[in-house]
Length: 414
Image 1 (cartoon, helix red, strand yellow):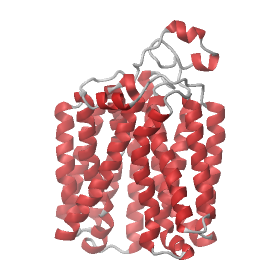
Image 2 (cartoon, one colour):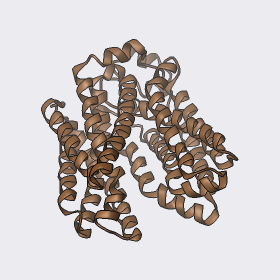
Image 3 (spheres, one colour):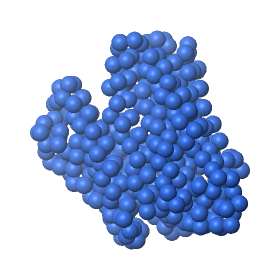
Image 4 (cartoon, helix red, strand yellow):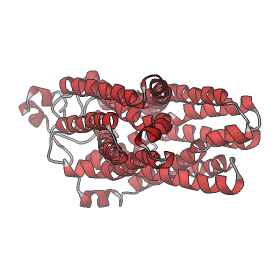
């Protein structure tokens, strides 16, 4: 979600209010990085992903308390994902005339309301409404975050800023599930959503004081989205996302059955390995940002090639606890290159419509997640737990080769 393009006149910047002029130069980027504002976006991502992940660690307790089946309670996750896929391209269109600071604050308010409703839900319908609100906030926030980051830092620092923002995902991945499970066991499942609500209120306060005025600059609409899809660079980026991300989620969604049934790990060992995956992703995010700062093509090719090799390693050596533990941990590290790499690619492919392009990217991610889970699930049902890595090897290899052949070849100065 990035770049140094989107031209604005120096005269316009000079005539703008101070808060607006600070993010309006001839290149559309500020002369100096506004790191507190970038940090507020990272905090927002952390709050959103934490809220998204909580049901996975609290599902049984939620189902028991709301007097529904585990499967029914699980629709809280489905509702968020489906609404997020629709909201991602829609929010920039519906809010195209509003100051982006106000839009981000409104999305964070939706996050606050969602957490409050979830924490006080007395029935499944109320919980689902809460998760729908979360999906709107999640899709809107993701679709616009890169476009805003490119207005908060000089272009040379864009990849670093996106890596910083996406650190919120890594931290949430490492912390949300285990801390949520611990809080749910200690104080009840609602306490985890109360804590998430506190984080969201803090996020709102930080954004209120650190985000500068960001008048709308793009003018996304359905015609613009259609026009974006006619651009070869955008189409290649979205196709690469569909292949690489569907392969990743096909493999990772069904990694636990592989560790249980093929590797035959204990539950405590599985937990430790998954924690290793999260920690690997945390550090991989920084390395991915460093690589993307030089070339998003190199970052994606390196990450994709590494994951494809690791998935193939699982096909061969999944019976070994050591091989599986190392492969899964390194998989998390390699995955860190994808979010910042793809977001940088799509925005640099359409710098004049960064918000619309970001919305299409988020929608592609959601479709890839669903298709990977479905495709991997079909293989797992037919050939067993190794079906997930099989799908991953095929899809990620194709996506990596596509990126190698047709990805952006510009090497950025550091």
